[in-house]
Length: 415
Ligand SMILES: Cc1ncc(COP(=O)(O)O)c(C=O)c1O
Image (cartoon, rainbow, N blue to C red; front, side, top):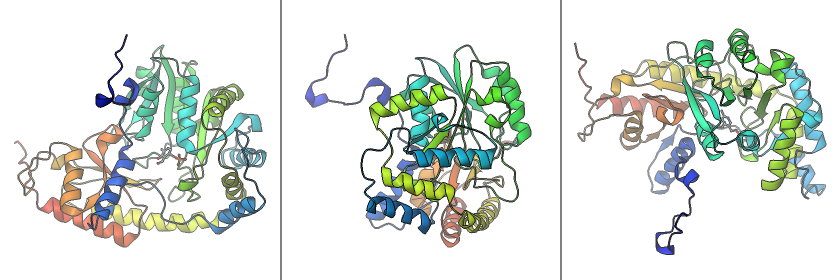
């Protein structure tokens, strides 16, 4: 029997939580806030949220819902109007047909993913996560008693998951494959061909379900087409949960509204879990989301044009900085920057930069810029910057990083 601790040594965390890392991107954003509160002029390139406000027509729909007293407990899986709008979205954007009982609304894609895992994972089942991947996936799997299995990708392949690596990682215990397209942190977009190649592997392993996190679907540059794995075949659709939301593309991160479509039995399991934990999502916010999904999208074009300018500026500044390099991302609003040449360097204070976390700490101290180390995404030595900030701020931050790198004494390369 485990011994209950005395109050003086009380640690409220259970063994699962003791192993859980806090979200690195949220922690980095908090560090920037704390340093600012101390009077330091810190620039944060840590958080993944658009700096544009929610469009007015969406805000107005929420205000109207409040005025109409839609303030009671909402239905757990989402108000009917929103579930209908989600079905329409999947039909129009992705050529996927779902009935309202095959969709669910939750507090962000974050809660969708957590609930899907909570509702379906048995202890010690494995979840395959291509890395680099979003900071929360592995921790959510662990919190739900599963085992995260990282599938490394390569910088040289622009971080595309290779079908042979997927095949090699599947075991009898594999329950889920998590896909994220476009990817956070790399911005890579898998093509239809890439996705069909993965589906070919998955078709040989019908016990594996797929969770496709498509939250950055509409943040794509140029004319890069979009394809999601449930579109491959009815067989794939029957074991895929496609998650999406309004946070990023509709500039609604703080509204906490995400949704998913998938097999009715899984949606029902998620509804039961959600009904016993948080219940339905705040009522007026759901009316806002209806206006978002059914409303005009022209604001996205101007937001994207602005993001693209910042992306190009960021890529140029990074690749002109000694010791750093990055690809041009096709989607999302991040650069995943390779910094291998700076590992082993010595700071002016005489500290050796041994990891990407050491480097991002050095950037905070010397450049007053907060970034997220690649280790948080399962791949080192890299760091992630978000370019969802004004161009002037991005430029200032990257020039300060360049100046800080200029003060490092680089490790001489062995002959
Ligand atoms: C890949 C990915 N999935 C999900 C989320 C969370 O989305 P939401 O705001 O809908 O919870 C994020 C947010 O950063 C993300 O980057």
